[in-house]
Amino acid sequence: MVNAARPIAAGFFTVGLLALPPAVVAARGGEGHAPVFLATFGFCLFLAGLLRFTTQHTPKGASLRLTRAGGVVLVAGLWLLLPLAATPAVAIVSGLPPLAAWLEAVSAFTTTGATALRQGPASLYVWLGLLQWTGGLLTIVAAVAVLAPAGLGGLPDRTPRGGTTLDVVDLTAVLREIAPAYGGATLLAVIVLLVSGESPYVAFTLATAVVSAGAHLPPEAQLALTLDESPKWLLLPFLLWSATSVRWHRALLTRRINAAPEQTESLVILGWWAVLGIVLGAILYRSADVPSFEAIRDGLFSAASLISTSGIGPREGTYMSLPLGLVILVVLLGGGALSVAGGLKMLRLRAILLNTRGGLMRLVYPHLVQPAAYEGVGVGMLGIWAGAASLAVVFAVCVIALSPGLPGLDAALAAAAAVVTNTGPVYDAGGAGWPPLSSLPAGSVLVAGLGMVAGRLEMIGLLVVIHLALWRT
Image (cartoon, rainbow, N blue to C red):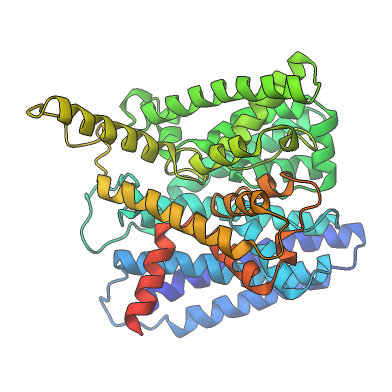
């Protein structure tokens, strides 16, 4: 209990601190919503203090380590509880009903970006931007510290111990390792956009979105992308950054790029982005009647956005000009392991293809000796197949559960892909007249929220939590 309560208390404390900047924005803009965010700050601090002080007296020498299953449950608890603390502020400021406001908060915190909002006060978008930025950081920390050491879905475990049945990696140590680069990338994106002439509000919301692979943007930011070509070129490197492994980023910064196990995977992702960008540019050139240079630019931007599972479009209606099936396939594949990108992950696809190739080779050459490890990553194929199977299962469940209230199968497929890959704009821009996910029946809304959390838990993590809950009852 102590091990789980303290990180959750730290999470509530963080959400409370995040409510202060929107309060300042609301006060300066005369919106009248500053008391709402201050009340959120006070409520979250109360919850954090309650959890912290009721668990501060522990036996001397007690271990603060978690089992791997306990670490997964802890991370799932963070994804489920922290958006609840942010929901009242979203509901009051936006005017959405409670269930729709909860889905909006979950969508922001899981960096999904599926939204029912078309406009709103600046304080609301700053609040959503901070939530998705924090959710992106939690995604990387959870993957490195909990999900990979637990062996979920074949994620590569980079822990120096090699792993025992106990000992998830220290969350604080991983946070200290990752947060500086993550925050530095965000600050750099803000500075680059400010230098290009964007307002601080637009620069902040765009930077938090691209670095976290989120998509909650105010109308002003989307208008800046549509009317000005410079943000699209400037944001491309940050979208590719969010699609690749955080360990590869560290190797780049420490000049040990050739020694990084993620080197091959990252190069494959960059090559995939270049090819896909040209293909999407050609489609835009032919179908949307866009000049060739603008079509290639929008194609490269759209490819980077879809691979990173951000889903931000270079202009309104871009995804409506692309084949919906191709867009769904791209986001279902996703980006790299140990990144903020969702989807199956390029690592798993390459492992499945290599494993299939090895099986075919054994049919031809029965006595052929092949390496057991997958290019030094050391992941088990059983976990990789389990991750792929769990993605298929969760996707199918979401298609069935989200179908009520949607106009057709194409809408259900787009909604399920948007939910499980955390790429909300794929649904929002996929078809004209499709209702917001928050307007669906209550059961569908709950499944949509759980599907978003499943995407952040690499799918199989949510199944582990459900299995533990059923086993204990």
